[in-house]
Image 1 (cartoon, chains in turn orange, green):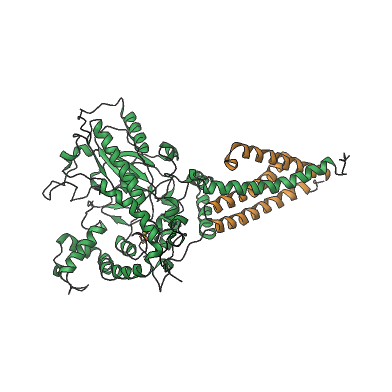
Image 2: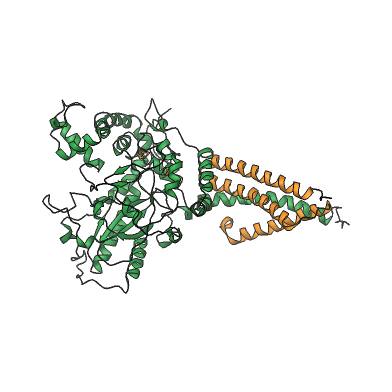
Length: 96
Length: 502
Ligand code: SF4
Ligand code: SF4
């Protein structure tokens, strides 16, 4: 079946590359230089965000949609916190 | 610099738009993939296949040199008459029927019950109260409740009846171990043979476990039989004057096997669940294993839920490394949690034994208490640790099986409760979310992961109040989760249905 097959995860991989490339383009337009460790921070934020949706779906499938939704909200809050940290890191002015 | 497309959007802008769309598509795709993972038949541990893949947790990092149990005081072997709740309540009820004027508080001798049972009730007076209530109050109330609401649960009972019908085909031993356990002519008249030697005990254990899985066992492991955990009387096929004080030498090894109850049904406890689906399968697997061992020339005796036991299983399962004793007093396994019905085959085939494991259940149970908070009868301890809880000479969690059994007789649908199985966070299916918890938590020495998981469990998942599981008017015959669609009588049957709470 499509959603548990290798092709699905291949597509997800491609989409991840597109998302990263798009963000790089967005960052370059603003003149931000993103060191690799700052990039990892951003990837972590996006990973938590994406996995929260996967967890939500899995718990819906298990008949625990209510718990899934609460976990989704928790995941989004965590990813927003991480994302805010990432944003601060990449927009911070270098020290004189 | 921007390179414009014909419509005036730069490639760079197109890439950025694709990125935003990618986020949306990825989120949607992951939800769909998650729903598929959550529903997948492959996640139904023990119900998806009959092969060794069902025992998927790598126990090796968590093994330790046993034994996992050490006596802390004088050991007393379990008794069918007192520890086995069905036998105890039946004996009490029989004595009461002969002396119906007897009232609690009067001397037990007036009931004419055995001295052993009377002593047990003196040692555990709360069990006397519960057992008395069971047959004088709870069972009659339950008959009236079933008259009123029974049709709503009739398909759950039908599901159970199909499994219990098979019990009539499963025969336990009809002669003492020295006779019935040894190979004799099988149903096809095949000759017996001297025991076929295996190359090594390790290979013998591997082969036996492989066969156990092929016969339907989800989990299988080997330990030595401990005489402390043999019933002190009443072994099957033995006359009352049989010498129960010594373990037959050919019971040296115990092959412990386990099968979960169906996952959707187990979550609909205590009103819709049954133990008999797993009882049937684990009993069948054990009897097959016994037949296979006898065919190879080795004595064997199966101890199963449907043909009865001459020993108690949970401590053997723990010694065999299948899991750890939880707050509920039963063995919590990594693959199926407490959702695991077990059987044992005793034999003298020399086998390498498995080691007990410590994968964090003891520590988790000390802080969890979800089963105790959910238990409608208050049978599960709320203590912070099992320290001082000594039963028959060993210190570990145990429950009040008198109050537990009382609630079994209050529920609708097939008899029993099993709510503590459903409520336990370890009793979960085999999908990536639960596998992540299974793999990470036991490897975290700080306990932070288990605290986080427990907090999510308590705050994100729904747990009805314990009182809701009771009969009206105090309760509403709640189930932990709704029954699976295929057990909904109103969907299939053209009969009057009176749903509790309506
Ligand atoms: S089976 Fe039910 S009544 Fe018995 S201990 Fe478990 S939750 Fe309590
Ligand atoms: S519900 Fe919690 S306390 Fe009870 S057996 Fe399971 S893990 Fe232990």
